[in-house]
Image 1 (cartoon, one colour):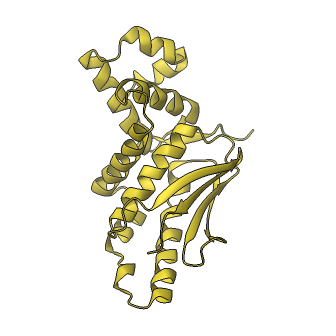
Image 2 (image 1 turned 90 degrees about the horizontal axis):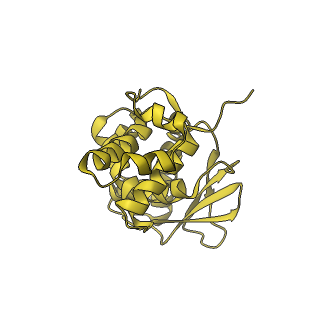
Length: 205
């Protein structure tokens, strides 16, 4: 049997920490938490989160929706900010080698536009190689944007289990990584089909 679509504890733990802080502060009641999560989900967050363990993506989605609706006052911008913060957290923790490489890369040092474009593509392929370390579903690819010869797209196929909250937070994650190289607010997501999530560049680099 295929494993249930899941997120690695290294990423999920941040969501749990935020939720439990709001519960402790009284911003989210235990009753509301019980209403929004399943009993099994409650049991999961009542135990320490193991960074190398897999957790149900549906539990992540319910918790992110709860955070958006409370701390984020229902705005999806909260999810984008969460993704940015999650990227920063992984950068600081140094858990994944890809993040360390990305911090050191400098495609902007290329003066030739074509060389810069190719160097950026190499960075993107390294970035998406992080995906299987955080999610056990979806297949990510870097593609040339057919509408813009100097832009890329990040495509996630087999994406039916991808919750919308994750689409927003991944946009923030990708934009935070782009900001490392002084190209902030570079990506926007779209979903042409339920099984395909696409991130398009808003401009060339």
